[in-house]
Every structure is written in C-alpha cells, then in structure tokens.
Length: 88
Image (cartoon, rainbow, N blue to C red; front, side, top):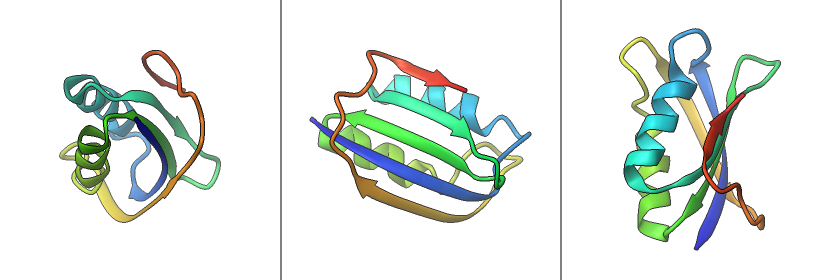
C-alpha cells in the first residue's frame, strides 16, 4: 500500500471537485480525503494499492466537467490513512 498527497490547483472549488474525487476514489478502492484549502486549491490524500492510487492521481487532472485543473503536484507521504474516503 502507498499514500500520496496531491495539491490540485485551478478552478477546483465550487464545482463538485471533492465529491467527484471521493466517488472516483471509492470506485478505485482508494481511501483518503479531499479538502478545500484557503488558497483555492484542493488537497487530496490517496492511500491504497499502487495501481489504484496512480490511477486516481492521473484522474485528478480531469475532475468533474465544470473544473479546470491547471496543476497537480503529488508526493509520497507516510501515513496510515483513513479507513474510507472523506471530504472536508
């Protein structure tokens, strides 16, 4: 299992980005969270099988149809990760 922390920038708040990310993560079997940050970006923590986490990280560039992603920066983190996928 691996965990990654990604910062997604662009038009990603107010466009259902976090909820759509949660649905995609659950579909892939990834646990973690999606949180709005004060600077207008979204932080995504993704934990699970390497292939599933990488698939979610690639999907972050797409997001929901109303979003416009300009940057996705991901880094490996060491965390136990949550038991499900939450949004905040």
